[in-house]
Image (tube, rainbow over all chains, first blue to last red; front, side, top):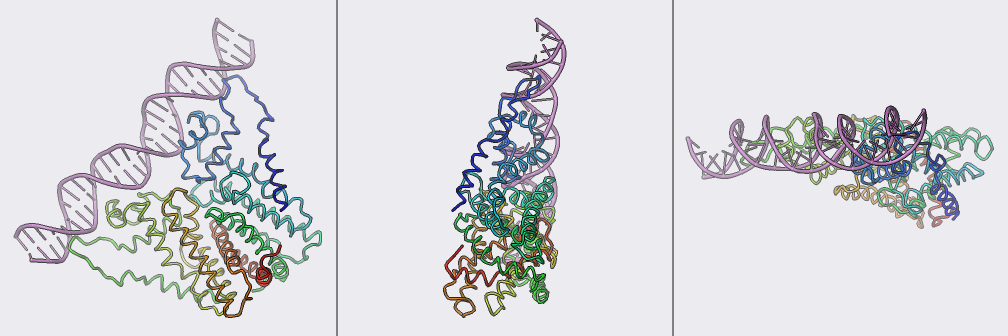
Length: 233
Length: 233
DNA sequence: CTAATTATGCACCAGTCACTGCATAAATGG
DNA sequence: CCATTTATGCAGTGACTGGTGCATAATTAG
């Protein structure tokens, strides 16, 4: 409950990207015959569902409905350019699914619960027809020599730093104890969300993920009091 | 503390596999010029560190020090046979790292804490020179059409069912409340461990993972009491 | 020693990989 | 109309993919 509201709000955002904002600042040459933003969105979904390594140029061109030459002219090479742009596109387009409702929460606890529950809804693919799990998480499991792994790592740091910032705010506003180890708590929440991404990939539905979130949040008080004791056990 | 003890115990098990148990039941033909179990171990480590898709036959043969023909003769095709055997080898050889100490615990809580802390030690690569994270978790993030994904899913179900069985035992032995939703709790622990696998892949060291486990276990009492109330919040 | 059996090394297969050269098409600036 | 600029379609690049055929080596059964 409450999740659907924000989901529909985000859905409007999803269907009206800022691609139309710049209608076409076409210079002199022949105009592009396809929608660049739509093509990038298609590529993002493909990378997301199949993984980086398993997605070939042929897969991409077929799904986008364009030729390989056009793909390279518009996005550059697969490794360094296209995938990086897809990651950025993913973050820009879908972060609202996990963060919109959390941003409106008045306490750190409510924000965390909203973040995790909305992640559950998004990861399970129950709200949109989007691939399961977190694209950045899935991509990071691929190769080790991938140069765009840095971009991923940065994104994960973003998730962590956002969580920590929200928890820090909770401490500052008094809904969490002053001596709380906020980084520890943020890392825990981040880890739970990462695990949910994997569980979603392996078939966990929304209710199971919601259940995991409920269990995690049920321990919140004990977690907070223990973390403020500077880490026992 | 306490973790190192079991780690050294497991290390002995690791260095003395049951490969020497069957010295060589060689039939008539030319004897194999390489240690089949050692080669499978090498393949397992490669798949583990690089992922299934990114590991080519050339990578495997080079690391094993054998020719492609010998590889196919000994293990079969990459998709259906080699990778499946590598997964089984992985589970058989390394499950003790996560479960040995948990099996000796007298309560479900102690068993869960041991399972997660030893997973932290193993996933961070701090105890052995092994790739980071859980091989099955990493493999599951790869392709979607992979036939050996069933083998993986079964393995994950094994983790879940073991956790649930241990928690059920705790209920039966009285260290957990009778009306506890054991499946919910087991799914939560499974999700935390999966998240730790991802965090380890992205550079989290042992101390960070241990910290995550401490935070999770700090909420144990609240989790147990909430889960026994049949899922509030 | 011979026959049978199994393993190995080498060359090699068709298919796919990411990627590009080139001629042509379609737009704009003058 | 022309020059310039950009996009497209097609064919094709060398390198690599997983996987094999074949001759040979090394072993055992008789």
